[in-house]
Length: 439
Image (cartoon, rainbow, N blue to C red; front, side):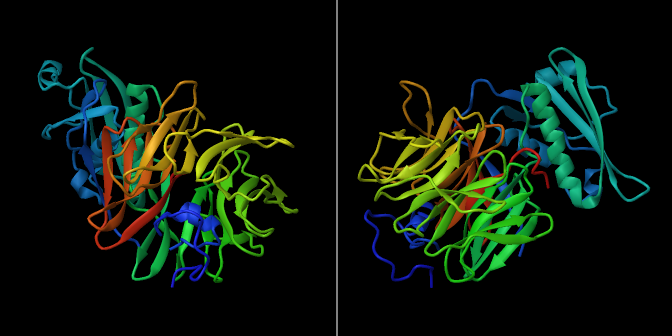
């Protein structure tokens, strides 16, 4: 039975899988490592994509990871690069025939090798060439244990991304998400492509709303293990965890302050659902919102001075922004559509992503500047819980495909989407970790 069964009907219609806003309504709508594989689905071709060739790395078949394939998928998923399909026959020691690679349409070329070191680790080497200028621009060697072969490939992709695009790649970061199979819920932490990783928590009761601490070492989430919604904080490395909000009523929707010392949460301890600020070192929660409205799903601005959140104070769920100072008033941000939930801010604080209900539930983005209008970045109808990559280039979100809950990533223009394939398992509640949240 889902938590909150028999709870009062909410004041507006919402499907049961809209867990985030539903958790504020007395948790009415909450509801083993599985290998997965991303498939890159190009729905549009960007005019600024850089064509890159990444041939098969020499001897990569000796390890447990197809290093070159991981690098290619990482680069393509970013939306910044277009992969030029090529064969093998090149490594970091081989001088490329630049005219031949230009003829194949490549502007950049990365090639490398995989070899076993005497201590059992793997030596990953690669070199990056600017094909147009006819010169090498980057070369690296990484020594990694077998368990980190995939991580090594992600780091190579990030090095290539940063050199060619001038910004940090996010492939060596992590994501957290919840799976459900046979009425068992599992909180997982994986590579940014959904592979590898670990089980943080398994439970017969729902787990919702995972949120990364800024240090990338801790997760906050809502657990129903005790039969009610309780906010937990867990150290991902050690597994040590503790309840930080277990008050009367529902405790839900945790969001980390940028200092990593406080959480904004939604509590119903005083009746209704309101935003509170909790100091993780202890003390009484500070109530932030007043009045009869439902206020929930907070997220902090990058500078920690304000919160963006969902409230039905205007008659239906909309997105608002409010400072944290005494007497601060709320400013409405969403105006298009009658039902807007699940807000998240880009790392620079300039773009808002959220879910809007029209003909279905779709992920939208809105630049927080005068005159900006919302843009749909998906064409699906059951989207949930968008979360920004730490470089602000991508979003991960949950949606439905062929009757299953799946995860997708998308570029902010919606042109390049990737889907996490999983057989016979529902995947939901994604949260993209910060830089430093490396596997």
